[in-house]
Length: 532
Image (cartoon, rainbow, N blue to C red):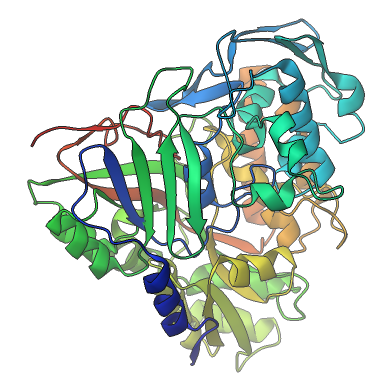
């Protein structure tokens, strides 16, 4: 068993040190956050699909509708002060009169139309979220319109539950950009993609001042924010991949929030009266994935062995800790319509017997990709150990988000430990990345689909998932949800849920307005500091 590091972290550390400003004890009007930025790859809302990007984008941009920070299942007005749903599912949004972009340009319906069309024309990961609800770059030309400066009309191309459409627009794909500013910075026909990778053109509470990859992100207050001036003058996000460093600095008061602490460090800090421990359910999951394009994992008999080679209890207790809860179905157990776990347990003798019947009595060798962050590496190491007991020799290869998820999006991997993100606070939002693959061809652009990334061709499951999106009757939709989960588990999937993911953070006690949030991505607009 060998472990390689793809990047030279020593060189990265030197560059980080050279670029970093001199951070001191945090000022009252600044929120300083420590986290691992290895998976922060872009700040273009039409391209970002990573949780770390969502955290930043959530505070640079606004959406027509938003999920309430303290009750994410509740949709609340954003840039749209109200919306109406017609009998045929057509959505009509009325924009706020006072909303402006950071440039000073007013937010208009033309910006909304341009932003959503831009997502589809660029055709990156977020575009797949719109395609799932029936839209394409071509169809938006006729289905999306701006009859006047403050009205947006979105018609349906397929019969989709309007609530699903609204939840989709409340995600990062629905971030509205300043079309005039972006057009001024576009290069050729890139629609401003190069510029927006590390610049912002939003109407949100903060403005991107600087992003240095694997170093720091600095956001400055948008004094003209339409909801009112944010309480923090500046947000500073520091790249801190080591848990011990985060713990030391938050205990010393050098940072206010630690977002990438190890489970043992979180546990050790739980009794510290100067800290508040926040745990937010993400709706996503830590998973083991294998590629069905791989000669070995293409065999369903081999995939069927893997659930018996994962120590769910051990990983949940000793490895994941505060980062998750044991769960073998990729749907949070508390969601209406979620089914019970199938009850998989580590069973080496059974796994060996199944491997022999599958044609591998002596096991085989393979490679596993994993982010070089906690708890990903720890989960991968635990799975590596139990696979070895059945004769499966795994070489772990660590890397950053580009190196790991990039290969997964290119479908050039055998095995990976990763984390999914819940797309909506319901069964469909949790599981559709696992059960929807409407085009399994290599040229498909549904790169956010885990089923597609694993080359898993599932027309029946995809059809069921599509039916659930369209079903308006709650009881029938719940029945479809349960059918989808059961069929997923019985199909020898290439995706194995290890634990339901939570996002734990340690927050200094004098930081107010953050610890009570339950949103997957935090809102920093109302965060303040007391004199404690």
